[in-house]
Image (cartoon, rainbow, N blue to C red; front, side, top):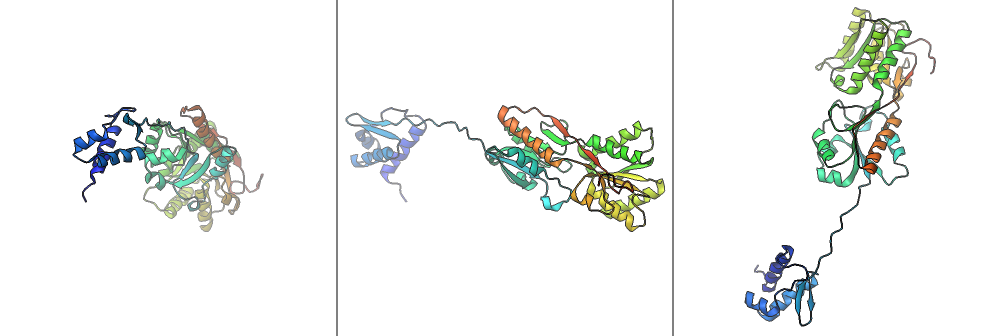
Length: 359
């Protein structure tokens, strides 16, 4: 359809005002001038000016003409999003070894205006940088063994969004991190087994997970303690990439028999409990033939048979401290990458000794 003549005048003048061809308080052409320029009637040019006045773009002075209205200055928004995003690489129900970081985060948020939103890795990948910076004040990120969303997180960092990593630390990246003292955990587990009289002690882990600082530090703690005790023989029972879980457990069983290994520090409680059940089903007694120590102190550790000796992480404290780092960065507007470690403790149960000293 053909555009009405008055609308052509309106659109042209609006464009010139938007492009500052006509400045604030500057007089526009009169009705007569417009009618001559556009070859239209005075009624048409008058309607065009009326439309601009109704739109709040001009004001009219009797006997003087129409003038560009001074626009209100846009006030820079001081709005700060009140959501903290917690990103897990999986849904919490999919893995029994996931600690309760959320409790600590929520405790840290008490008394503030911030709220917690929990999402999976896919949420980061499917959201734009603009959406994330608009909706969230900071991000707490739990990686698997590596940072899958490094590109997204780094761009958010460049946009001054505070980001903190849970459980692991990545050298060379500008992100703060809060984790358990994994090095100390490996030391405590190994020292306990040495005190039980063991000399042939192994460390079990999946090869993939050894890329993670958390498991690597546990392994280094194991090696350090063997060295300090004058034990030169170490065994690293590693899951090959192509091996399924049962093949890995069978491999451990074979090495236990061949190397006469009497104790094992496993990288986490889930693997430790699986190993206990596998060895028991094949006639190897726990702990009289092989003592086993896990890491995490998940709920299942106290329910397994025998109950599992483990290194307890304080997941609540880790979450609380991590959230505190984000809130501090929002307050100070400064974020210096740092790695904070939260103390761990040894929980002795029946998988490493026949008597269970502290339940």
